[in-house]
Amino acid sequence: MRILDVDNGYSPTGGGIRTYHDRKLAFFASRAEHDYALVIPGARDEVESHGPRAHLIRLRGVPVGAGYRAMLSPRALARAIEGFRPELVEVGSPYLLPHLLRPALARVGAASVGFFHTDYPELFARQPLAYVGARLAARAERLAERHVGFQYRGFTAALGASEHSLARLRAGGVTAHVSHTARRRSRALPPRPPRRIAPRAARCAARRDARALPRAARPREGPAPRARRVSRAP
Image (tube, rainbow, N blue to C red; front, side, top):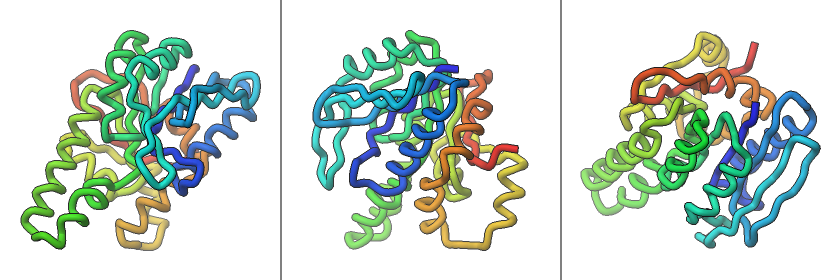
């Protein structure tokens, strides 16, 4: 299978999202079963080889602060996707990237998976406005949840790494589902506040996610993507 990851949330100085993608890249670099490429923003366009079938593609990104950049050129993103010709694409940024990628994804006919890494309705909508007023903060939070659903609309699947992530996806109109293995694993974990679970889950080892992802992204009928919690492969 040809698998492509695209994420504006990657930063060389970042934490959980960077660790997730670095380990996933290392996982595929050490194996020969799949062709894999990771597309992230950088200061310039360049390609790094991490083995005969694993590659890191940097596209020029606009600086957005704190060491992060954003890939905003639909043409550059389309060239990366159409040049690699993936069968499966994982999109890790729900802000604008799914909308920018949608035409290219349709042209190559790839299955598309959204991964909800960051609880941005909480971090970037509710919390900043909480000091202004609870009602305004709650409204902004709901609008952000609807935006997540709009971005992932038409995707083959949407993944959440925690029950809290799944709740966000459901609130945005994404049909949610937790696999039986995820339920067994969640019962074995000690209870923790949702805000602590989500960042921890984003740092999960690539071995677990890479094996679960192809099965989670099988095309299904119906317009709504299905949200699934990533769990350890059997």
